[in-house]
Amino acid sequence: MPVVLVIGAQWGDEGKGKLVDYLAQEAHLVARYQGGHNAGHTVVINDEMFVLHLIPSGILHEGTLCVIGNGVVVEPGCLLKEIQGLRQRGVRVSEENLLISARAHLIMPYHMALEAAQEAQRGSGRIGTTGRGIGPAYVDKAARVGLRMADLLRPQQFRQKLQANLEAANRQLKAMGGKGFSSQGIYEQYMRYAEALAPHITDTAEVLHSYIQQRKNILLEGAQGTLLDVDHGTYPYVTSSNASAGGACTGLGIGPTQVGHVLGVAKAYTTRVGEGPFPTELQEPLGHLLRERGGEYGATTGRPRRCGWLDLVALRYAVRVNGLSALAITKLDILDELKEIRLCTAYPLEGARLSSFPADAWALRHCRPQYETLKGWQQSTRGITRFEDLPQEAQVYLRTIEEYTGARVELISTGQRRQELIVLREQFRNGQEAV
Ligand code: IMP
Image (cartoon, rainbow, N blue to C red; front, side, top):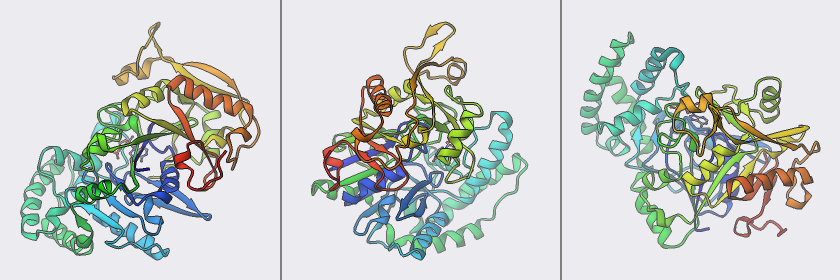
């Protein structure tokens, strides 16, 4: 490989889980670098469905080391539940195949309570978060008061920091009409978590460096997507971490020169959950058709996803912001029935064509997307594994994406299962027959 980074090129839910699972077959190490249990990666193996929130999908491969990096915010109760759930289904999880950075920050119960109160106060201006306490945990990190995995291993230090943080959190909660927390209960609960997680906590950057030095295959797995990135996304309707390629370096403690290949994953159409502008959003009945055919309901919250046409302006932006080496297009088969398929190619605003993806939500909300209309293929692409077996119209659709974004399409997913995939890059073929 050796170091391949897989990121979401849209608003998350692009089907990264399946791609990472496929690429993980050849990986010695798979690492997550940002976000928390707001993510939900669905992987189907032998008709068995696994939904992972914090643990990299590499855990499903015997002999692959999984790393939760320093950039991730971890709710330890959720992590332990996920570990238990995997063990119950016969997946081995131990300190030999799951490591957590000592520098990763903890999500605390008051983070979730603060977020709920803040979202309620925002009213119609709410962000529509997943309600997992992600934002407030990153606020504490940036304010330099956050509790980290390393603190779990020092009870005295943990108790002192917890008390100070809790005083501040309780003051805020009460000011918003909420109830405060008692420190003893949280302390005891987190010390139980500490006991269970201690063997997994280590300096994961050191482990990564040693794997890089040995030229082992490493896969870095992004959560959410570029348009939810706190810097480059549709601010303020974003998550609180750097979901774009840059986040992999800061979130794992490696340098940009060590990343060899950056693969951006995009659906053949677009979805988003939560609030915020979405220029190509479809109203009913087409939006409904995509939602039902694509099973577009949140893996973490079950919320229905908003659906729309593929937005090539946004995708070209993602190619640039992430320095994408290539694209993977997922869920092509969901478009199989459509007579016509539209692709957004420009965003005119007040009569002028915008030269780039706008920074402000107002412009995104008020631009009027311009479309190119292509003929649909109206036949099944389900399970196709060779590009030349795709209907001509589907090939044209994919070539138009390449032309407009300037990025090569190297992988095309044609179904939920691991093997329902067209692989156009030799390096990723994993023993698949060459085309
Ligand atoms: P938060 O990450 O819970 O703070 O939510 C902020 C925004 O990111 C909301 O619009 C969420 O719906 C969205 N979001 C967070 N995680 C995901 C994800 O894994 N997929 C899609 N959207 C997400």
